[in-house]
Image (cartoon, rainbow, N blue to C red; front, side):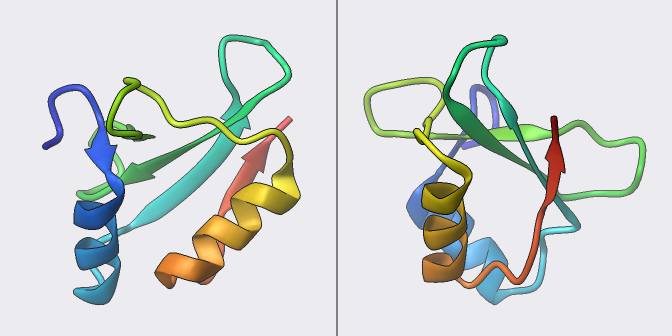
Length: 82
């Protein structure tokens, strides 16, 4: 689950359980696409990227698209790193 990233169905369950502590949206590898990472534990725990079934990191073409995804799974907000 968390070794390489977290899949959408697991993320949805964690959001429903209020287990997600922080969400960060940032550019992936300095490119044009955006990625979403979450923190489950305390402030010293690491951020875990959201992954797709085929890729290690799920990406979105715009912040609007990330926002729609986040809203769809029940996230109420996220920080953006520019």
